[in-house]
Image (cartoon, rainbow, N blue to C red):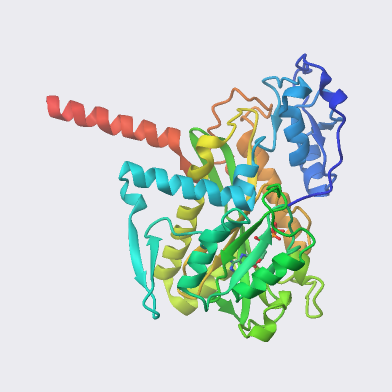
Length: 433
Ligand SMILES: Nc1ncnc2c1ncn2[C@@H]1O[C@H](COP(=O)(O)OP(=O)(O)OP(=O)(O)O)[C@@H](O)[C@H]1O
């Protein structure tokens, strides 16, 4: 998700001396002047300062975070400073890089002979066979164009009746997205596009083309996706938390797979930024349903055990998407990041990861939205700041159960390692007795 960026001058980061903090006084800086952020920080007694002042806690735009960490800035963060992004968050949040990292992760597991990378062959009615990962098949088959064009054509030919979705890597909020159901349409687009495919395209101008999930689970006949919030406080060891208040975002128009509706984005794209322009947009509920109500709906219509399984599978895909990028992330101890996960559930109740946003919108479209986002920021701060309330990058980032608020632990590799070590130790002692 891109945001309007308030640029900071590199001169601001020219100083290399870490700020000296006044004892007990916490200062914050924010690029996003939103009340959910500022009222949260002020309630904690924190004082707002500018980016060139001595800040402890910076809620920055992704681009400004990258500037701080760039070699040219010469800025060295002190122990009492924390920032809300990892400098190379794009490994997870850019559509093409996410796919590349997940593909690499699966290949590596396969090479190790890890059972997680087991595959199966799916026969198609036309006699063709598709090969799929059994446990790690959670992103729709995706190629980066123009680089993977030949591979895409090969896959396309296996099931030419499929629909595909084209998404520009450098855009957000549904901009530039379209659906295709014929190769000729892609070729025509490539010829007519203002930036036709050519090898010199930068990755920002490239596209991903993904198999369109054409059998989404519908509620009231409408397509929706799920927005979940995931807080990562460390990538190595991986420590991540899932916020319990996600929501579903609905299309305003009933789902229809007919070719005539292929260009109707009110049918196919669930982005609020798209749907709010539709005539049927309801500003009271904003086309949203809480995840708690969604869960109740599913339990009522499909049963408890399949609902539990779906939620477990969503946690599974989040953990493995994070593990896929963990080795390439700049795991700076001053950083944490809250990701917006976009997931589509198909009518077999299989979840598909569509996208990960490094700056999920903090815009409130409804009253409930405001409450949710206020709580989200409050809980993020409680998890990442040590119990004494003073940001400290040296802290081992192990929040108390109380500090978690409405976050639940998704994975803590440090804990797993300790538990493994304990069980190995106990086993050794049992054997010696
Ligand atoms: N493979 C897919 N199958 C079905 N629907 C999809 C698929 N990929 C994307 N969509 C739909 O298109 C919408 C936009 O896709 P996506 O979130 O990837 O793009 P975006 O424009 O970058 O959005 P954002 O503003 O969230 O960054 C999704 O919310 C979803 O409704």
